[in-house]
Image (cartoon, rainbow, N blue to C red; front, side, top):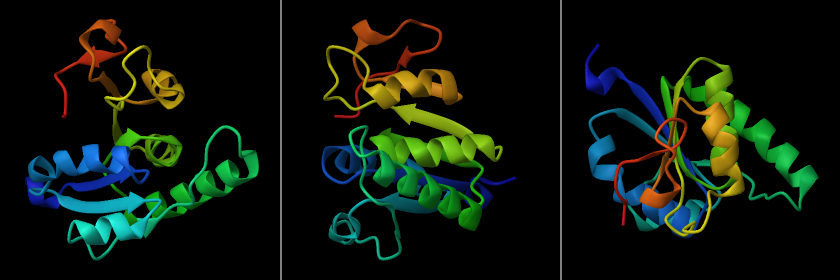
Length: 152
């Protein structure tokens, strides 16, 4: 299997999560790459014309979160990625969870903004994702959460 035949879904909320994902874009271009985000306008700013849209959600919006989880499942079913990665937040986590449930390899990269502790989705991802990475060395535990450097 060549890199270009590996299907990758990269998902992130708009704002800083998306910007961190875009910093990884160059190393993902060798793959059959698809994107999902909460704000398609940010994708267009980076020259990405085709993007799947997720509803924005968080822990304080349970109905919106349920809708987002369902939409994430539909996106994963549509693309059937072999790898799902996310830099956050909840919409990206739902894509990662759907991917894991359907057999994809999964990678969570917690936002650099979470310097004191992992984000809530980062804490969930350490149990869900095949690989959970923090951008802060002192937050890594060496097993469930690893440090590989910072994206920024």
